[in-house]
Image (cartoon, rainbow, N blue to C red; front, side, top):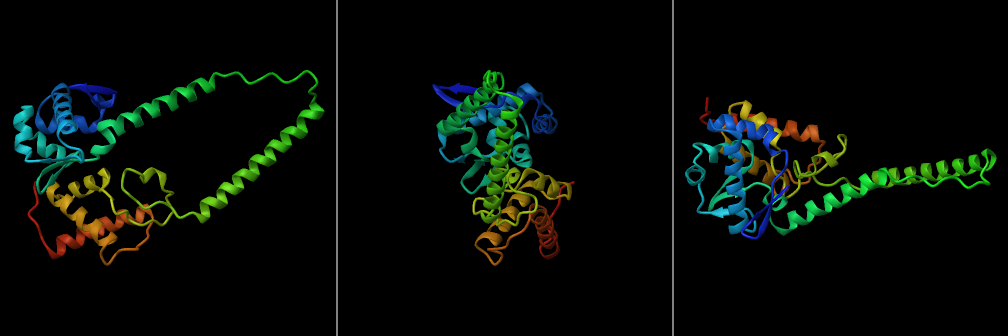
Length: 255
């Protein structure tokens, strides 16, 4: 779904109304889905007009509350992982995936691919030629099966020799095999589920984001650089990280 803003284009999902995170924003701001989605539209449209990297200098969560008329909306966005504090103001999470010309191009490409696949499913296979018989068809079928098996073996061997991609967070989490040992990418961002884990333990949103940045730096440019773990192992490392952070530098929790 795309919306035009002053001649430009922004991306908004058609199922946004039923997104559980929108329901959570509704509960946290004591408002309605219509009010929350309208507020999101204002925020994303404003970002599209005033930033190229998602960073909004001078904009604060208090200003977001005032502009949208939803008390607590700015901090609620941080809690669910759609907004982050920044030294200059605030930062829209994954801005480049949803705003601007590149996002529009990806959306249109995905739509074309989906349409192509749908059309391909209804295309009728050609009828066999009249001279085909059971005797001639079976060898050809066996040959096709052998070619398919050979291709599968080749692809499997290539997959085993190619290193898995570095773990960037939710962006490519689904693409990584559960048993693959991967590095933390330089542009890694805390997956939403990991943030929820920390929040359930009583960590405030700002402290979660701060510890996530320390975690990223330690495993990319710090002493932990070069460490490879499976996805479950990395999630356990995040849990251990929070435990150590609480042990050596206690913080005030929210109820």
